Image 1 (tube, rainbow over the protein chains, first blue to last red):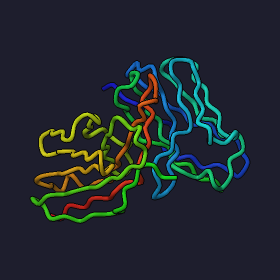
Image 2: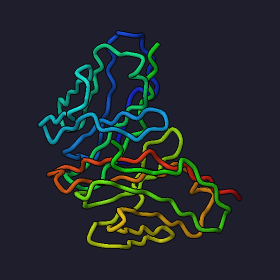
Image 3: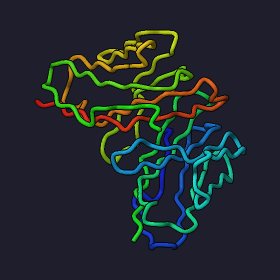
Image 4: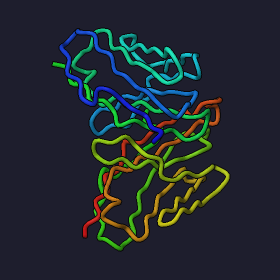
Length: 111
Length: 115
């Protein structure tokens, strides 16, 4: 089945230790998104790629970076995780402005 | 500044009855609205949408109503089933979103359908 896959599903890291979250898709969608969702809050868009073009949201901290080496894969790098970065990270894809398809998310814990 | 608001964190309904989930928005530049459903340990899945040029869209047991003058939309589920128990997110797209589908989400409403 075509889908959006996120690895790992659960990630534990130490304060200040860099961490990378992975997203892959078999939908061949040209747009990929990363959202951060904290408990009881709305998913918040961090950035998105339109093909290879990177689009950062104005309020996304510099601590968050992303890479998209090809159509299928997109990575979220957190350079120095703080306690406030503990959250669910959701990856989504779309074909242009069409509806978004979400992965199951990665739950990040920062100790 | 929360542009999409879901003021009810939770809702409990009896099986077979109607579930009404509400959503308010503040940005008049939103042109498209969506509802997503999320089960625990899964990502949100698209449920139903409505364009700002319409006031109603129906898909089986699910109907979304849009009141532009009130900047309010609602999702009706009739009849409600236990399998509908999930978190429901309202989302909106800005007309200036360009070629992508950047969405602004609400905080979600947890629906519990009691058998």
